[in-house]
Length: 402
Image 1 (cartoon, one colour):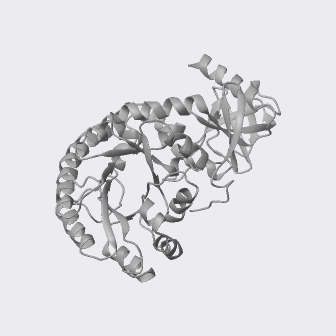
Image 2 (spheres, helix red, strand yellow):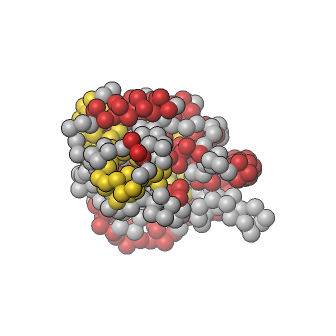
Image 3 (tube, one colour):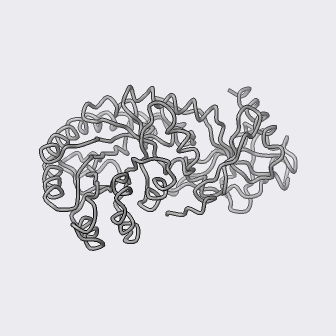
């Protein structure tokens, strides 16, 4: 492992010798290896790419050209509209409900967009908002997907395991909401989504926490069994009211398990393409790290300490150490507990610190996948020991959505 990381460092340093940090790279061989592995894990079911985890329309298009990948799961409606207009995909599902009236007006005013974009809904108020923007009869029917809450609520709901997402949790509620949607003009219910965050988004082997890992795996097993029955019943209830085109579930961390659910017709993945550090804590499959960012050593404040400029590219989620970027190359570096990763400087200690000199590079991995793209205007694509091109991130393309 140490030798492999040394070789990777040498290769990345050679490929980017002409660049000045900070900058970000994507190793194309690792990206393509991960994309193929995710399709294998899906076991024949199509994989929808989560754009939030990629945030570059060029790389989204690259992934979608590969066998086994079909459609995009976007995170906002304006983003979905941009992706369709850029011809990245003509099948974009918006993963979260929207209250963007300008974007809804654009969607409702363009039959081609309306045919390509699917809105996420879980409340009649969301339908009311759409109608207030443009009334039924004055727009094409809009495609909608029902968001089924996949959290586990044992002990008659007194315990909540998972994210707090949709109010539609039971099969009965799903059927009732499906009846509401199909009973209203101007909407067409085409899909169901159920994202099991407590399985797909929670590592089951946290480093150095064996007991916690055992507990997480036990909870995930019980949650999966409960969801398997409930999701199947909910899909059956919805199908009594609508002819569904798709039932979507899963994420990188649960792809194989979710694909095994007979109620699911497609799965979603995105983070596994870049291989961020949060996915080092999974047992079932760990992606090959493919995305990195480089910072330059600018000072040596003391023996055993090397300080880089910048580095504080912290991920969203709970404010804890797992959201900090990890110094990856050279191996043997660690953050200083009292400073962490700073906006303008990040001191590093460890066995490799004394071997670093001013001007050397430290390669970091981000805790989450696509969020690194909010820090740079382009991603330098590395093939072997050469940068073969640079592609814009959403930020570099002037796309700012959240």
